[in-house]
Image 1 (tube, rainbow, N blue to C red):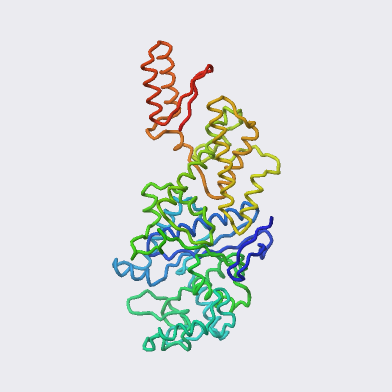
Image 2 (tube, one colour):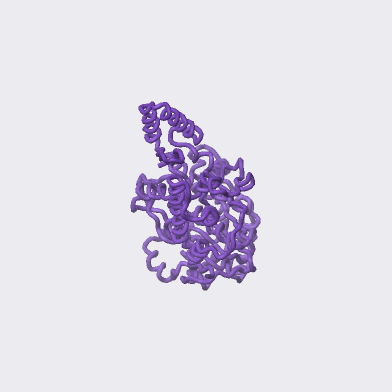
Length: 497
Protein backbone atom coordinates (compact mmCIF):
# COMPACT_ATOMS: atom_id res chain seq x y z
CA UNK A 1 0.00 0.00 0.00
CA UNK A 2 1.30 3.45 -0.94
CA UNK A 3 1.83 6.01 1.81
CA UNK A 4 -0.97 8.58 1.74
CA UNK A 5 -1.15 11.76 3.83
CA UNK A 6 -3.89 14.21 4.72
CA UNK A 7 -2.76 17.55 3.32
CA UNK A 8 -4.13 20.57 5.16
CA UNK A 9 -3.60 22.65 2.02
CA UNK A 10 -5.80 20.54 -0.26
CA UNK A 11 -8.09 19.19 2.50
CA UNK A 12 -7.79 15.65 1.21
CA UNK A 13 -5.65 12.57 1.59
CA UNK A 14 -3.06 12.22 -1.16
CA UNK A 15 -0.35 9.73 -2.24
CA UNK A 16 3.04 10.84 -0.94
CA UNK A 17 5.43 11.87 -3.70
CA UNK A 18 8.67 13.68 -2.98
CA UNK A 19 10.25 16.50 -4.96
CA UNK A 20 13.44 14.45 -5.27
CA UNK A 21 13.00 10.66 -5.51
CA UNK A 22 13.94 8.83 -2.31
CA UNK A 23 14.58 12.00 -0.31
CA UNK A 24 12.39 13.97 2.08
CA UNK A 25 12.93 17.57 3.13
CA UNK A 26 10.97 18.13 6.34
CA UNK A 27 10.59 21.24 8.50
CA UNK A 28 8.89 21.42 11.88
CA UNK A 29 8.01 24.76 13.46
CA UNK A 30 9.70 24.37 16.82
CA UNK A 31 9.29 26.07 20.17
CA UNK A 32 9.56 29.67 21.30
CA UNK A 33 12.18 29.37 24.03
CA UNK A 34 10.84 31.44 26.92
CA UNK A 35 9.73 28.61 29.26
CA UNK A 36 9.92 24.86 29.85
CA UNK A 37 8.22 22.61 27.30
CA UNK A 38 4.72 21.39 28.18
CA UNK A 39 2.51 18.46 27.19
CA UNK A 40 1.52 20.11 23.92
CA UNK A 41 5.17 20.32 22.92
CA UNK A 42 5.63 16.69 23.97
CA UNK A 43 2.85 15.55 21.65
CA UNK A 44 4.13 17.52 18.66
CA UNK A 45 7.74 16.48 19.11
CA UNK A 46 6.84 12.79 19.57
CA UNK A 47 4.54 12.78 16.53
CA UNK A 48 7.06 14.34 14.16
CA UNK A 49 9.88 12.26 15.61
CA UNK A 50 7.94 9.09 14.76
CA UNK A 51 6.94 10.42 11.32
CA UNK A 52 10.62 10.94 10.57
CA UNK A 53 11.53 7.49 11.93
CA UNK A 54 8.84 5.83 9.82
CA UNK A 55 9.89 7.61 6.63
CA UNK A 56 13.44 6.40 7.24
CA UNK A 57 12.15 2.91 8.01
CA UNK A 58 10.41 2.64 4.63
CA UNK A 59 13.55 3.76 2.84
CA UNK A 60 13.56 7.54 2.56
CA UNK A 61 16.61 9.69 3.22
CA UNK A 62 15.19 12.38 5.49
CA UNK A 63 16.67 15.80 6.17
CA UNK A 64 14.79 17.05 9.22
CA UNK A 65 15.06 20.68 10.32
CA UNK A 66 13.51 22.12 13.48
CA UNK A 67 13.86 25.77 14.39
CA UNK A 68 14.06 27.67 17.65
CA UNK A 69 12.25 31.00 17.86
CA UNK A 70 14.68 33.01 19.98
CA UNK A 71 13.38 36.51 19.14
CA UNK A 72 9.96 37.13 20.63
CA UNK A 73 8.06 39.44 22.97
CA UNK A 74 7.54 36.60 25.47
CA UNK A 75 11.28 35.98 25.68
CA UNK A 76 11.89 39.70 26.07
CA UNK A 77 9.27 40.00 28.81
CA UNK A 78 10.83 37.15 30.77
CA UNK A 79 14.26 38.70 30.40
CA UNK A 80 12.93 41.98 31.79
CA UNK A 81 11.33 40.25 34.78
CA UNK A 82 14.56 38.36 35.50
CA UNK A 83 16.79 41.40 34.84
CA UNK A 84 18.51 39.28 32.24
CA UNK A 85 18.80 39.32 28.45
CA UNK A 86 16.86 37.68 25.63
CA UNK A 87 19.93 35.64 24.70
CA UNK A 88 20.44 34.31 28.24
CA UNK A 89 16.77 33.31 28.56
CA UNK A 90 16.76 31.63 25.14
CA UNK A 91 19.98 29.71 25.80
CA UNK A 92 18.66 28.43 29.15
CA UNK A 93 15.43 27.08 27.71
CA UNK A 94 17.10 25.63 24.60
CA UNK A 95 19.30 23.64 26.96
CA UNK A 96 16.19 22.56 28.92
CA UNK A 97 14.49 21.58 25.66
CA UNK A 98 17.26 19.13 24.78
CA UNK A 99 17.17 17.67 28.31
CA UNK A 100 13.42 17.08 28.14
CA UNK A 101 13.49 15.62 24.62
CA UNK A 102 16.32 13.24 25.51
CA UNK A 103 14.21 11.87 28.35
CA UNK A 104 11.34 11.26 25.90
CA UNK A 105 13.62 9.46 23.47
CA UNK A 106 13.32 12.14 20.76
CA UNK A 107 16.02 11.85 18.10
CA UNK A 108 17.78 15.13 17.45
CA UNK A 109 17.00 16.96 14.22
CA UNK A 110 19.67 17.32 11.56
CA UNK A 111 19.87 21.02 12.31
CA UNK A 112 18.32 23.55 14.71
CA UNK A 113 18.45 27.00 13.10
CA UNK A 114 17.74 30.01 15.30
CA UNK A 115 16.21 33.28 14.22
CA UNK A 116 19.17 35.23 15.61
CA UNK A 117 21.50 33.16 13.42
CA UNK A 118 19.44 33.73 10.26
CA UNK A 119 19.36 37.53 10.20
CA UNK A 120 20.98 37.86 6.75
CA UNK A 121 18.46 35.46 5.21
CA UNK A 122 15.57 37.26 6.92
CA UNK A 123 16.63 40.67 5.64
CA UNK A 124 17.30 39.31 2.15
CA UNK A 125 13.79 37.85 1.96
CA UNK A 126 12.20 41.12 3.16
CA UNK A 127 14.21 43.05 0.59
CA UNK A 128 13.00 40.74 -2.21
CA UNK A 129 9.39 41.12 -1.06
CA UNK A 130 9.80 44.89 -1.12
CA UNK A 131 11.26 44.81 -4.63
CA UNK A 132 8.36 42.68 -5.89
CA UNK A 133 5.74 44.99 -4.43
CA UNK A 134 4.61 42.71 -1.60
CA UNK A 135 6.12 44.76 1.23
CA UNK A 136 6.42 48.44 2.14
CA UNK A 137 8.38 50.41 4.78
CA UNK A 138 6.66 52.66 7.32
CA UNK A 139 8.70 54.70 9.82
CA UNK A 140 11.26 51.98 10.50
CA UNK A 141 8.76 49.11 10.26
CA UNK A 142 8.18 46.96 7.18
CA UNK A 143 4.77 45.41 6.48
CA UNK A 144 3.55 42.68 4.16
CA UNK A 145 0.77 43.84 1.83
CA UNK A 146 -1.65 40.94 2.25
CA UNK A 147 -4.03 41.92 -0.56
CA UNK A 148 -1.17 41.78 -3.06
CA UNK A 149 -1.02 37.98 -2.65
CA UNK A 150 -4.08 36.68 -4.47
CA UNK A 151 -3.97 33.23 -2.86
CA UNK A 152 -3.93 34.48 0.74
CA UNK A 153 -6.12 32.19 2.84
CA UNK A 154 -5.67 29.05 0.75
CA UNK A 155 -4.20 27.05 3.65
CA UNK A 156 -6.66 28.04 6.38
CA UNK A 157 -9.68 28.45 4.11
CA UNK A 158 -10.28 31.97 5.46
CA UNK A 159 -11.44 34.79 3.21
CA UNK A 160 -10.41 38.37 3.81
CA UNK A 161 -13.93 39.70 3.36
CA UNK A 162 -15.24 37.35 6.06
CA UNK A 163 -12.42 38.29 8.44
CA UNK A 164 -13.00 41.98 7.70
CA UNK A 165 -16.60 41.72 8.84
CA UNK A 166 -15.61 40.18 12.14
CA UNK A 167 -12.65 42.45 12.74
CA UNK A 168 -14.11 45.87 12.09
CA UNK A 169 -15.46 46.39 15.60
CA UNK A 170 -12.19 45.34 17.24
CA UNK A 171 -9.78 47.70 15.46
CA UNK A 172 -8.21 50.45 17.55
CA UNK A 173 -7.75 53.29 15.06
CA UNK A 174 -5.63 55.16 17.62
CA UNK A 175 -3.04 52.38 17.69
CA UNK A 176 0.21 53.74 16.16
CA UNK A 177 0.88 50.43 14.42
CA UNK A 178 -2.58 50.46 12.87
CA UNK A 179 -1.98 53.97 11.57
CA UNK A 180 1.24 52.85 9.84
CA UNK A 181 -0.47 50.07 7.90
CA UNK A 182 -2.01 50.56 4.50
CA UNK A 183 -4.50 47.79 5.30
CA UNK A 184 -5.61 46.34 8.67
CA UNK A 185 -4.66 42.82 7.50
CA UNK A 186 -1.05 43.70 6.75
CA UNK A 187 1.45 42.18 9.17
CA UNK A 188 4.95 43.14 10.30
CA UNK A 189 8.03 41.76 8.60
CA UNK A 190 10.39 44.08 10.45
CA UNK A 191 9.78 46.04 13.66
CA UNK A 192 11.62 49.26 14.47
CA UNK A 193 13.73 49.18 17.60
CA UNK A 194 12.23 50.36 20.87
CA UNK A 195 14.30 51.83 23.72
CA UNK A 196 15.98 49.15 25.82
CA UNK A 197 15.18 46.29 23.41
CA UNK A 198 17.74 44.22 21.47
CA UNK A 199 18.01 45.28 17.83
CA UNK A 200 19.84 44.47 14.62
CA UNK A 201 20.93 46.88 11.92
CA UNK A 202 19.01 46.74 8.64
CA UNK A 203 18.32 48.81 5.50
CA UNK A 204 15.15 50.05 7.27
CA UNK A 205 16.92 51.00 10.47
CA UNK A 206 17.67 49.15 13.71
CA UNK A 207 15.03 46.65 14.70
CA UNK A 208 14.07 42.99 14.81
CA UNK A 209 12.12 40.63 12.54
CA UNK A 210 8.50 39.59 12.85
CA UNK A 211 7.76 35.99 13.81
CA UNK A 212 6.40 34.77 10.48
CA UNK A 213 9.32 35.91 8.32
CA UNK A 214 11.76 34.00 10.54
CA UNK A 215 10.44 30.58 9.53
CA UNK A 216 10.18 31.47 5.85
CA UNK A 217 13.85 32.48 5.87
CA UNK A 218 15.01 29.44 7.83
CA UNK A 219 13.18 27.02 5.52
CA UNK A 220 14.68 28.67 2.45
CA UNK A 221 18.20 28.89 3.87
CA UNK A 222 18.33 25.27 5.07
CA UNK A 223 16.10 23.37 2.63
CA UNK A 224 15.52 25.49 -0.47
CA UNK A 225 12.45 26.98 -2.18
CA UNK A 226 10.17 23.92 -2.00
CA UNK A 227 10.17 21.25 0.68
CA UNK A 228 8.22 18.03 0.97
CA UNK A 229 6.67 18.30 4.45
CA UNK A 230 6.00 21.37 6.58
CA UNK A 231 4.77 20.24 9.99
CA UNK A 232 3.46 21.90 13.12
CA UNK A 233 0.58 22.20 15.54
CA UNK A 234 -2.93 22.93 14.30
CA UNK A 235 -2.83 26.25 16.15
CA UNK A 236 -0.18 27.45 13.68
CA UNK A 237 -2.32 27.06 10.54
CA UNK A 238 -3.48 30.66 10.87
CA UNK A 239 -1.87 33.08 10.86
CA UNK A 240 1.65 31.67 11.06
CA UNK A 241 1.68 29.07 8.31
CA UNK A 242 -0.68 31.11 6.13
CA UNK A 243 1.74 34.01 6.36
CA UNK A 244 4.73 31.79 5.65
CA UNK A 245 3.12 30.73 2.38
CA UNK A 246 2.36 34.34 1.43
CA UNK A 247 5.92 35.48 2.14
CA UNK A 248 7.79 32.59 0.54
CA UNK A 249 5.66 31.97 -2.54
CA UNK A 250 5.41 35.66 -3.38
CA UNK A 251 9.19 35.68 -3.83
CA UNK A 252 9.88 32.25 -5.38
CA UNK A 253 6.70 31.67 -7.35
CA UNK A 254 6.92 28.05 -6.19
CA UNK A 255 4.99 26.04 -3.55
CA UNK A 256 6.62 26.40 -0.15
CA UNK A 257 5.69 22.82 0.77
CA UNK A 258 4.05 19.92 -1.03
CA UNK A 259 2.35 18.63 2.14
CA UNK A 260 1.20 20.61 5.17
CA UNK A 261 0.73 18.33 8.19
CA UNK A 262 -0.70 19.46 11.53
CA UNK A 263 -1.01 17.65 14.84
CA UNK A 264 -4.01 18.13 17.11
CA UNK A 265 -3.92 19.92 20.43
CA UNK A 266 -3.66 18.49 23.96
CA UNK A 267 -6.49 19.03 26.42
CA UNK A 268 -6.34 18.32 30.15
CA UNK A 269 -9.46 16.70 31.59
CA UNK A 270 -11.43 18.05 28.63
CA UNK A 271 -10.25 21.65 28.95
CA UNK A 272 -7.70 23.64 26.99
CA UNK A 273 -4.36 23.60 28.76
CA UNK A 274 -3.41 27.00 30.18
CA UNK A 275 -1.61 28.47 33.15
CA UNK A 276 -4.68 30.49 34.13
CA UNK A 277 -6.72 27.29 34.59
CA UNK A 278 -3.99 25.69 36.67
CA UNK A 279 -3.79 22.62 34.40
CA UNK A 280 -0.51 23.55 32.74
CA UNK A 281 1.98 20.67 33.07
CA UNK A 282 5.56 20.71 31.84
CA UNK A 283 7.30 17.62 30.52
CA UNK A 284 9.80 17.58 33.36
CA UNK A 285 7.09 17.93 36.01
CA UNK A 286 5.30 14.92 34.55
CA UNK A 287 8.40 12.74 34.29
CA UNK A 288 9.69 13.81 37.70
CA UNK A 289 6.42 12.45 39.17
CA UNK A 290 7.56 9.01 38.05
CA UNK A 291 5.63 8.65 34.78
CA UNK A 292 7.62 6.45 32.42
CA UNK A 293 8.74 8.40 29.30
CA UNK A 294 7.77 5.40 27.17
CA UNK A 295 4.25 5.55 28.63
CA UNK A 296 4.09 9.20 27.52
CA UNK A 297 5.11 8.19 24.00
CA UNK A 298 2.52 5.44 24.00
CA UNK A 299 -0.18 7.82 25.26
CA UNK A 300 0.57 10.19 22.35
CA UNK A 301 0.64 7.41 19.74
CA UNK A 302 -2.67 5.84 20.79
CA UNK A 303 -4.53 8.79 19.25
CA UNK A 304 -4.69 9.72 15.56
CA UNK A 305 -2.15 12.52 15.26
CA UNK A 306 -4.56 15.08 13.75
CA UNK A 307 -7.22 14.75 16.46
CA UNK A 308 -7.26 16.48 19.87
CA UNK A 309 -6.07 14.29 22.72
CA UNK A 310 -7.25 14.48 26.33
CA UNK A 311 -4.64 14.08 29.05
CA UNK A 312 -6.16 12.53 32.16
CA UNK A 313 -4.86 10.41 35.03
CA UNK A 314 -6.86 7.48 33.66
CA UNK A 315 -5.36 7.91 30.17
CA UNK A 316 -1.78 7.97 31.44
CA UNK A 317 -2.50 4.95 33.70
CA UNK A 318 -3.84 3.03 30.69
CA UNK A 319 -0.77 4.01 28.68
CA UNK A 320 1.48 2.85 31.53
CA UNK A 321 -0.24 -0.56 31.58
CA UNK A 322 0.04 -0.76 27.83
CA UNK A 323 3.75 0.01 27.99
CA UNK A 324 4.25 -2.78 30.54
CA UNK A 325 2.70 -5.22 28.06
CA UNK A 326 4.94 -4.12 25.18
CA UNK A 327 7.95 -4.02 27.47
CA UNK A 328 7.41 -7.64 28.47
CA UNK A 329 7.45 -8.57 24.81
CA UNK A 330 10.62 -6.58 24.16
CA UNK A 331 12.35 -8.36 27.06
CA UNK A 332 11.24 -11.81 25.88
CA UNK A 333 14.46 -12.55 24.02
CA UNK A 334 16.63 -11.42 26.91
CA UNK A 335 14.72 -13.58 29.39
CA UNK A 336 14.12 -16.71 27.33
CA UNK A 337 16.39 -16.58 24.27
CA UNK A 338 19.06 -18.91 25.67
CA UNK A 339 16.47 -21.40 26.88
CA UNK A 340 15.07 -21.49 23.36
CA UNK A 341 18.47 -22.10 21.84
CA UNK A 342 18.74 -18.74 20.11
CA UNK A 343 22.20 -17.61 19.07
CA UNK A 344 22.47 -14.32 20.93
CA UNK A 345 26.08 -13.24 20.75
CA UNK A 346 27.56 -10.08 22.27
CA UNK A 347 27.05 -8.18 19.03
CA UNK A 348 23.35 -8.96 19.09
CA UNK A 349 22.85 -7.46 22.52
CA UNK A 350 24.75 -4.19 22.16
CA UNK A 351 26.30 -4.55 25.60
CA UNK A 352 26.84 -1.23 27.33
CA UNK A 353 23.91 0.49 25.62
CA UNK A 354 21.26 -0.88 27.93
CA UNK A 355 18.90 -1.21 24.97
CA UNK A 356 17.26 -4.31 23.56
CA UNK A 357 18.93 -4.65 20.15
CA UNK A 358 17.73 -6.30 16.96
CA UNK A 359 19.19 -9.81 16.46
CA UNK A 360 21.39 -10.16 13.42
CA UNK A 361 19.48 -13.19 12.06
CA UNK A 362 17.17 -12.17 9.22
CA UNK A 363 14.00 -13.99 8.23
CA UNK A 364 12.56 -14.19 4.74
CA UNK A 365 9.56 -12.18 3.67
CA UNK A 366 6.61 -12.15 3.69
CA UNK A 367 6.20 -11.08 7.29
CA UNK A 368 2.45 -10.69 7.98
CA UNK A 369 3.02 -8.58 11.10
CA UNK A 370 5.27 -6.18 9.24
CA UNK A 371 2.84 -5.98 6.33
CA UNK A 372 -0.12 -5.20 8.60
CA UNK A 373 1.90 -2.56 10.46
CA UNK A 374 2.85 -0.81 7.24
CA UNK A 375 -0.67 -1.09 5.84
CA UNK A 376 -1.98 0.77 8.91
CA UNK A 377 0.72 3.42 9.16
CA UNK A 378 0.70 4.10 5.42
CA UNK A 379 -2.86 5.37 5.92
CA UNK A 380 -2.00 8.93 7.00
CA UNK A 381 0.42 7.82 9.73
CA UNK A 382 -2.16 5.70 11.55
CA UNK A 383 0.07 4.90 14.52
CA UNK A 384 -2.82 3.55 16.67
CA UNK A 385 -3.38 0.89 14.01
CA UNK A 386 0.31 0.09 13.99
CA UNK A 387 0.29 -0.26 17.77
CA UNK A 388 -2.37 -2.96 17.48
CA UNK A 389 0.22 -5.16 15.77
CA UNK A 390 2.76 -4.50 18.52
CA UNK A 391 0.29 -5.42 21.25
CA UNK A 392 -0.63 -8.61 19.42
CA UNK A 393 3.02 -9.64 19.20
CA UNK A 394 3.78 -8.68 22.80
CA UNK A 395 0.80 -10.60 24.19
CA UNK A 396 1.66 -13.69 22.15
CA UNK A 397 5.26 -13.62 23.40
CA UNK A 398 4.06 -13.15 26.99
CA UNK A 399 1.75 -16.15 26.63
CA UNK A 400 4.54 -18.29 25.24
CA UNK A 401 6.86 -17.14 28.03
CA UNK A 402 4.35 -18.27 30.66
CA UNK A 403 3.95 -21.63 28.93
CA UNK A 404 7.73 -22.03 28.85
CA UNK A 405 7.98 -21.29 32.57
CA UNK A 406 5.15 -23.64 33.55
CA UNK A 407 5.74 -26.48 31.11
CA UNK A 408 9.37 -26.14 30.08
CA UNK A 409 8.56 -25.76 26.37
CA UNK A 410 6.57 -23.52 24.04
CA UNK A 411 3.67 -24.19 21.71
CA UNK A 412 5.28 -22.17 18.92
CA UNK A 413 8.64 -23.15 17.45
CA UNK A 414 11.73 -21.29 18.73
CA UNK A 415 12.44 -20.12 15.18
CA UNK A 416 8.99 -18.52 14.80
CA UNK A 417 9.24 -16.94 18.26
CA UNK A 418 12.61 -15.49 17.26
CA UNK A 419 10.99 -14.01 14.19
CA UNK A 420 8.11 -12.56 16.19
CA UNK A 421 10.42 -11.07 18.78
CA UNK A 422 12.68 -9.56 16.14
CA UNK A 423 9.65 -8.02 14.43
CA UNK A 424 8.37 -6.55 17.71
CA UNK A 425 11.74 -4.98 18.53
CA UNK A 426 12.04 -3.58 15.02
CA UNK A 427 8.55 -2.05 14.94
CA UNK A 428 8.82 -0.73 18.49
CA UNK A 429 11.95 1.14 17.49
CA UNK A 430 10.13 2.73 14.59
CA UNK A 431 7.79 4.20 17.22
CA UNK A 432 10.68 5.07 19.53
CA UNK A 433 9.64 2.51 22.16
CA UNK A 434 12.68 0.93 23.77
CA UNK A 435 13.16 -1.02 27.00
CA UNK A 436 16.18 -0.78 29.25
CA UNK A 437 17.79 -4.16 29.97
CA UNK A 438 19.48 -3.42 33.25
CA UNK A 439 16.38 -1.99 34.94
CA UNK A 440 14.08 -4.85 34.04
CA UNK A 441 15.84 -7.78 35.74
CA UNK A 442 14.95 -6.79 39.32
CA UNK A 443 11.76 -6.95 41.31
CA UNK A 444 10.57 -3.93 43.24
CA UNK A 445 12.77 -4.82 46.22
CA UNK A 446 15.89 -5.17 44.09
CA UNK A 447 16.08 -8.98 43.89
CA UNK A 448 18.07 -10.09 40.87
CA UNK A 449 17.56 -13.34 38.99
CA UNK A 450 20.63 -14.76 40.72
CA UNK A 451 19.28 -13.85 44.16
CA UNK A 452 15.97 -15.53 43.36
CA UNK A 453 17.78 -18.68 42.22
CA UNK A 454 19.79 -18.69 45.47
CA UNK A 455 16.61 -18.54 47.56
CA UNK A 456 15.11 -21.40 45.52
CA UNK A 457 18.26 -23.44 46.16
CA UNK A 458 17.98 -22.70 49.89
CA UNK A 459 14.35 -23.81 49.79
CA UNK A 460 15.30 -27.02 47.98
CA UNK A 461 17.85 -27.81 50.68
CA UNK A 462 15.21 -27.15 53.37
CA UNK A 463 12.79 -29.55 51.65
CA UNK A 464 15.46 -32.24 51.42
CA UNK A 465 16.07 -31.81 55.16
CA UNK A 466 12.27 -32.08 55.69
CA UNK A 467 12.27 -28.56 57.13
CA UNK A 468 8.92 -27.78 55.51
CA UNK A 469 8.28 -24.71 57.67
CA UNK A 470 11.42 -23.07 56.24
CA UNK A 471 10.50 -24.22 52.73
CA UNK A 472 7.05 -22.66 53.04
CA UNK A 473 8.52 -19.47 54.50
CA UNK A 474 10.81 -18.99 51.47
CA UNK A 475 7.97 -19.73 49.06
CA UNK A 476 5.70 -17.19 50.80
CA UNK A 477 8.51 -14.62 50.91
CA UNK A 478 9.05 -14.89 47.18
CA UNK A 479 5.30 -14.86 46.51
CA UNK A 480 5.04 -11.60 48.45
CA UNK A 481 7.65 -10.13 46.12
CA UNK A 482 5.73 -11.17 43.02
CA UNK A 483 7.61 -14.41 42.34
CA UNK A 484 5.57 -17.57 41.75
CA UNK A 485 7.19 -21.00 42.13
CA UNK A 486 6.10 -24.10 40.20
CA UNK A 487 7.33 -27.44 41.54
CA UNK A 488 7.50 -30.42 39.19
CA UNK A 489 9.39 -33.68 38.77
CA UNK A 490 11.99 -31.76 36.74
CA UNK A 491 12.67 -29.25 39.51
CA UNK A 492 11.34 -25.82 40.45
CA UNK A 493 10.54 -23.16 37.92
CA UNK A 494 9.62 -19.56 38.69
CA UNK A 495 8.22 -16.48 37.03
CA UNK A 496 7.47 -12.90 37.93
CA UNK A 497 3.80 -12.06 38.29
